[in-house]
Amino acid sequence: MAQLLNVEDYRRRARSALPRLVFDYIDGGAEDERCMQRNRDALEALPLIPECLRDTSKVDIGIELFGRRWRAPFGIAPIGLAGLVRPRADALLAAAAQAAGVPFILSTASNTRIEDVRNAAPDAALWMQLYVMGERSIAERIVRRARNAGFEALVLTVDVPVSGLRERDLRHGFRVPMRLTPGTVLDMARHPAWLLRLAGGGMPQFANLLPDEDDGAPVSAQTQAALLSRAMDRTLTWDSLGWLRRLWDGPLLVKGLLGAEDARRALRHGADGIVVSNHGGRQLDAAPATIAALPAMLDAVGGRIPVLVDSGMRRGSDIVKALALGASAALVGRAPVYGLACGGEQGALSVLQLLAQETERTMTLLGASRVGELGRRHVEIHAPRSHAEQAGPAPVQAHGKASIYPAHAAA
Ligand SMILES: Cc1cc2nc3c(=O)[nH]c(=O)nc-3n(C[C@H](O)[C@H](O)[C@H](O)COP(=O)(O)O)c2cc1C
Ligand SMILES: CCCCC(=O)C(=O)O
Image (tube, rainbow, N blue to C red; front, side, top):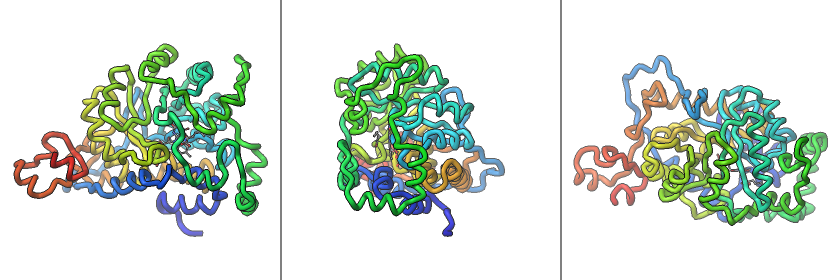
């Protein structure tokens, strides 16, 4: 069997382990998948500048955030419907996160109950991601259950007023109502290991929408369908943060922001953190790469609250780039799910360990022995030479306005 040396190797293995419908749901993005590509292109276009002859005999990639020590500077992003990959996926990912010493964010659209995820990872830093559908009482119930299960932060996702146009899903008939093609059924039959597991675990359900013990009110089929088709409550506005604040007294983060004005709005409305995200290129296909949007977001926030970032992170060096620009931490979504598809909890853990090792090696090569030593000087700016000469020594870095695009740097 071929060695699994990097996340792309896990991705390829996942591609053959899963029916194409499932793989494409995980792997795919919106429309022409330009945003997904843009995330990768922008990360790859950003070089790192090492500082040599520094003592790196001990390198610590850990960070401290929201009162917790993270053994590595990234957490697992929320993934809805992970149960399609294998039964109890959310519990397996949470257990892998616990073993790696990093946080796990449970999706509202998870297929494992909040309480069962806690039982699977009793010591993990668990965060709850919130989607708000029309029936607001459901969100209230989810928040209450997450609090009771000792979840430590609430992450409100705001980049899904409507689903992005996922063309891979549409081609497979993976939509509401589901319309499986003969090809898709055949493809499932060609993946007996996957099919047997699914048969053993049962068809994935939205576990957090099922009635729980102390509140038996059934969730309407309409709300279930709304979640499956990502039809969220479009009356939700910045003022709704006040409603959540009353329900939740822990850290409240807003996920899915890309513009500096929205970063300032999040601050004004009392968010405790933001996640700069384009949903891994699954929503607005015209959205910017998050690594390109990040510097302006950091400048807008001015260090008052932590800024996390995700979308397209496939290497430890991608994570280091985000940290060097000033992010507090990164999130990884698809990478650990590829690991899960290859080898369950151990596969997911292997991917987290791989990313941690790559992060450590990259920091060592940069001469940084702690995350706090990373800075914008490690990120080369593509300023046109003439501009750099006109503006005097170290022009762009000195003003902290790092931009990876020449047009911005020259502005
Ligand atoms: C299959 C899949 C399901 C997702 N489900 C959710 C979700 O339920 N809630 C959410 O806030 N984000 C969701 N996301 C977005 C991720 O949390 C994250 O922003 C994105 O995956 C990061 O990009 P990456 O996968 O390239 O690391 C999902 C992403 C994928 C790939
Ligand atoms: C079906 C639940 C929503 C998952 C999601 O947010 C995504 O597919 O990106």
